[in-house]
Image (tube, rainbow, N blue to C red; front, side, top):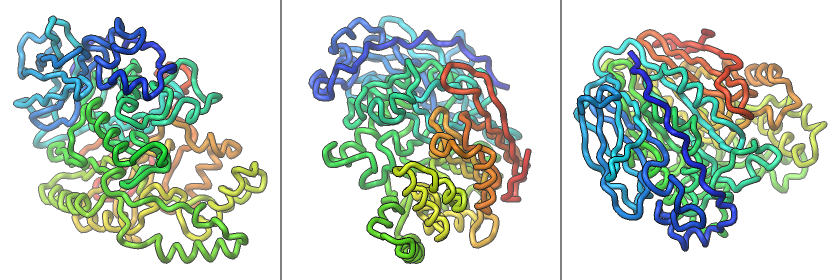
Length: 560
């Protein structure tokens, strides 16, 4: 039974605009934590600069433990007391301890409460040296033994500038999940006015700083601006979480050696990557492990994967491949040569050898132990997805010049048997084959969860023409989908064209925002895509739902 939710937190303080501050000024003032923030003009008296200013969160649940998070801003190392109880009045303290809020960690603390009972709801809080208290949080340990049902709320692609986090608000109000999964793009690194553009940006939805996040101070401030959102704060107050970064927590289309949105003028990529990872691990209830497994009794093993910064090979670009190819014949020849050559080279990887081997062993061990479901908590689509070339050719004929060439290239790539998105598993076919082969060798009931695309998807996964698993792809919380770029195509026509072109794709929605409610039982996995009524104003109303199910052992989806 779900424990009653604690009271909603007080509104997070609104910090003064930092638009006038450049990065050099921020670094001079030492924005490594509250001491630096307090040094900024007009900010010394802000609540965010002293005490508990950004709520609480919990994550990394185990069967007897959970990680707790808060931020306590001060001017020096400060000892906090944390307490865990089975009721929100804290009559009996189940676990407690001390955590030191340090400037070196931006005054964020992440103690791990141990000695807890499996499958149990708990309440927790932090107490400052002056007796001041944080919000009361609610969390839950993972169950042990026989489990008859487990519910996951699944999110991705939360761009503050595009609108309100109504998906978070709905999940918090629903009060029906055991665990929240965030599959990446928890925030976006862009400067103000780029994505979204000034015309697309929703009034009042500004992120700090207004320039692109490049150095540690930038990333910390961006986290702070997102934590100020009331719906994000409320959801993270109510549920334990498992999170993994995708690309925008560092830079767009990142890989181990660089990113599309990083250039030499922004400094060393390695330094930027380390700064992004450090701030992420400070400001979120996550461990420092790049990848990890979580046991949900005998029902499921959740494998949290790292698909971006550790080992990923650089993405291919069809547009770069076609540069200098003047005729359609030259383009086709280049694409054919690429498809049979560099595209399928086995050295290209997303996970890296160590993580691939860890996952293969984990899938096998999970099934040997009798666990029903093997769930990949990861970032990018695994299902095969090609553009509907006939639709793209028709669009290209009437498209503006700056879009026409891209549509033509995408249509040629589709005809050549190449995928729509080289930044997904589609761009790493040998790595995908290895993963699916390991799942089949383990006789896994493979369920892949994916974000990244801003659109909703349901795939039957295949390997060498055999059924290998299923995939649920989650739409964005606010980030816009294909309706923004191909708005001239009615959503139903787009869905029909995509499903008709791609054998593995069973269903899609390319025009609505929201989240997924995934339920696991010993006999089936189901997904309910929940579509919010909009993101331009704050509301928890839904515009609709879609449900699909898969029977355990079938590796096949059906309408719910």
